[in-house]
Structures are given as structure tokens and as C-alpha cells.
Image (tube, rainbow, N blue to C red; front, side, top):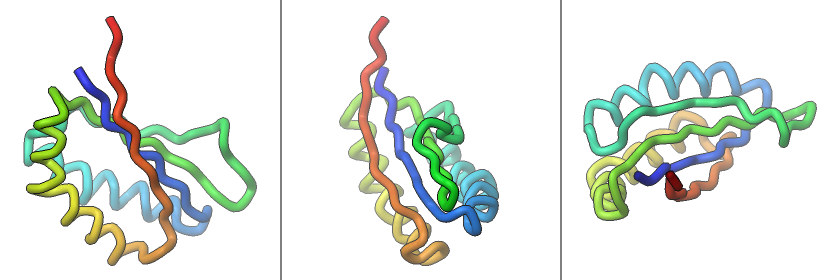
Length: 101
């Protein structure tokens, strides 16, 4: 099992709207697609300053082929949608991790 993690950083003024948008728009569309599963949104406490907030959104994905299919079918379009809504107010980077059992 792989975990696809995206870390987001944004100014405090935009954090509440970002969390609402992630919960009401972004996550439901991805869940409906079915390629990424078991979302978890967390607030990052260790890398935090007075002006910004950081969040981590994690998804379980079966393999890299499935993740690539999600990018092609939906990921790029959702990134563009997020850019339209929040303009340049959200910075992000993604990490792909493997679960070790």
C-alpha cells in the first residue's frame, strides 16, 4: 500500500476557507472517483509560524499505476481548480510513501 501525501501551506486568513473547500469540494470529488482511498486531513503543528498554517492531506493508493491514472483522470484538473479558487495563496508539495508492515 502506498500513501500519497500533499502538504499545504497558506496564510492564516485563508486557512478556514481552505479547510472548508477541501472537505466540501476537493475530497468528495476524489472519493467519488474511487482511485484514492481513506483520506486523512491533518494540521501540521511542528512547522508552524505566526502568519501561516500547514496541513497534510493523505490518501491510500494501491500502486503507482493507479496514482498515475488518478493524475490523468482528475488530479491535474483539481489542481487547476484549487489554483482558480485560491490563486497563489496556497503552496504545496507532494510525497509518495510506502507502508512498511
